View 1 (cartoon, rainbow, N blue to C red):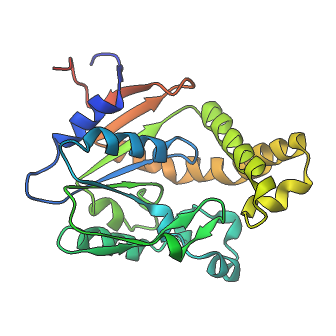
View 2 (cartoon, one colour):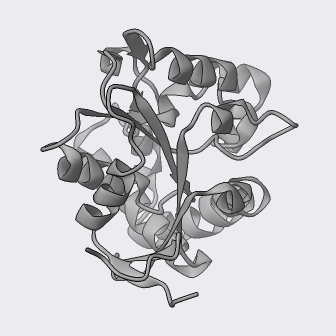
Length: 246
């Protein structure tokens, strides 16, 4: 096996395009830890593929249970764990997207909740790129993974993931100063140092890191395409082992 090699979003897009069947709707999942950069990569891939394929990006966050329901079930502090998703709705939607228009729910990171105003309809694109969590088998249910034609896993070290998570939290914390409706406005009573510590020690190490270690990473061995992302955001292709680019 050759060493993992650098890959650009454009080259990755070409690899993904090679897995698409002309005339059919291809469904590809993109997963990895919270803060790995899945949304950014999905946007870059959609742009790279746009000249040749009609692509719709779907976030699994839209299939999270609403906050009211999570609160009633005592699950708010486990948001992002398998039991906080409507897995049945996600798998049914992905299957239906192959044959008819489907309504896709939307999620607001600022509100930290499903947002009906962000829902949209997609109508049989060439490629449905589904990014987010919820692909790892949980409780014997692998229906979401089975709804995919291919799975991409975006890997990174835990140290880098923690760094990116804290920086993302702080960006939302800063933005909340001008947006009192933001979920992150409640943390504005904290100073910057306290908020950064809260993001690292409470949210990341007690919630998101255990979710990664116990659940999310279980999708990694299932991935058809395995990527490793470095601190400088460069990507390396780990699997499949391709000796050279044409």
